[in-house]
Length: 250
Image (cartoon, rainbow, N blue to C red; front, side, top):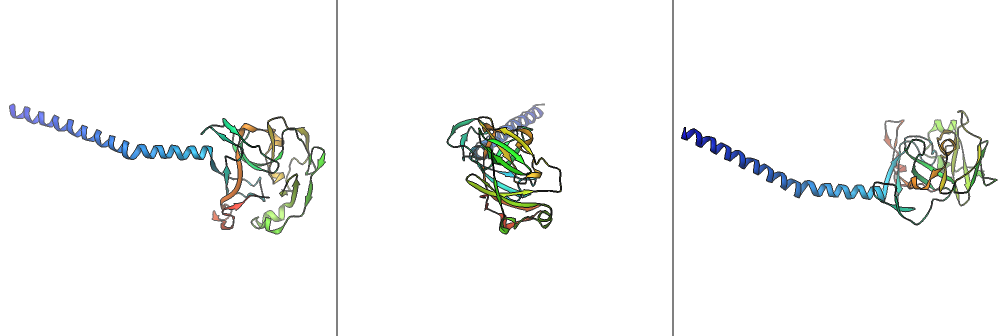
């Protein structure tokens, strides 16, 4: 009995020591390895939330400026500084301008979208047979340079019409798709105070402010300034190397 008791006691002591060792190792991993990684991840996500981000573009609503499969860089400091992980503004130093390509939360379903600002607060917006009318004045349109269509597929070139639209202070490419049903006449409507009217450059294939109204300034995430990377979804996701790190001006 004494020997059996001693063996049982030693077994319990070893179990306690093993448990203490495991707790010590777990504490060491938490303090030295896991916690620093979590802090680093939190900092990185906070930076992404407040300073810079990217946005995938799955549709052709911004063709020919942005193509399906593009990933665009979003400058979140273009207009303001926000509380990380929220849309609360700490301070504002600028506002979107006509022609800016912006990322925002859709008032229709809350999804993040990429569109172009065509109307500022107080502007009157109208569309007549694809022609944009801003504050009673039709916008001028002109021919488009071939280089702006370099990455547009041959099928899209056949089915779409392309031109340049001369917004005040900004000239950019636009597209029309005559072969589909689309909202080619709209308004006039006045953009409410603190809101912005968004449209896709591919006017006949864009679900935008014509359908769900102007966007609240507080819902604007930032300005899209460049294509970071691009893959061709119709051709086995092959990289479009020429679009990597390309500017979104114009």
